[in-house]
Length: 401
Image (tube, rainbow, N blue to C red; front, side, top):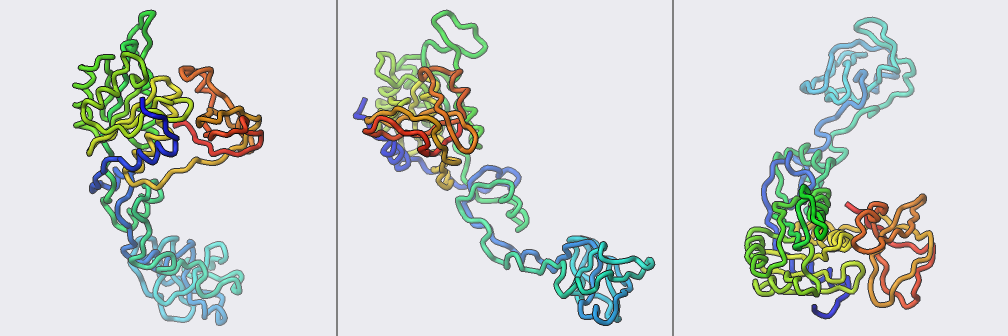
């Protein structure tokens, strides 16, 4: 294993050696969660016409001082073509919310402010309440034509998709979802549906990684398992590296005699940027790359796998796709003082409390699967010579996916 580096240096090296992600044209109904790679502009003013904001009657505001009764000369529903208001004094048009305000009208009087005198005649109850522009959403008042509404590198959610659709984008230029392979290693692992022998355990890290990727709007194209065999590992890894943009490996990367993954990657010609980070858990975490593939090697213990995945791997994949840098959801305040180290960064599982507080909930060890369940996420404790972080100190909180 090489000399240990800091978490910051690890992230820097990862981001500097990520493979390119191509841009593709994607139908808009398949773009949810993807990263936009073009600007979206208004193809016409928004709104595109003077829009009625209420159900009621369209009138000429100047006539309010002349009469308080109006004759209904037309009926205008949303989606009907623009009309012209009758030019006789006291004319009005019944109009629905969202309809085009008729030419000549400059005021919408809501139903509830009128009295219906007959099928064709109304009276204003309080004429002074109405004026030119009342209850009208003017054309172009939100955004002019050709204004940029969405910028590149925007993640497309419900609001963004609605804007693109409004502007007529039936397809969008987005980052391609990269092919991701998940690899678990170890002779001690068996499939979930197998009854393990006393010396065996069931595979779980690969499913944990797959689920976190899915929750991050990513997906694995392959999940496979490798035995602790250098020859078989090289054959399978060569195949995965040639057909995937990212390979995430759990286990087989420490100092044991059967931890053959680092050697296999080196012999396949990949560049090793680091192998070992000053952190707990997850010290053996490593990163290799070729021109077209990035390989993340995660320690096999469940907590180490989760931390490395959340702190390095998923942010790196999103960065390669052009996503804006993601920060923690919020900061939390420690309830109790926390002992820490002066030589390594500690990723500490915490349980959230009221008013943005957090209580440490460390696992008994990095293989303690069940204890992880009782934490909501983790905070990052940088090294400190003080030996302790005091209660009420604030730290960024990262939620488990």
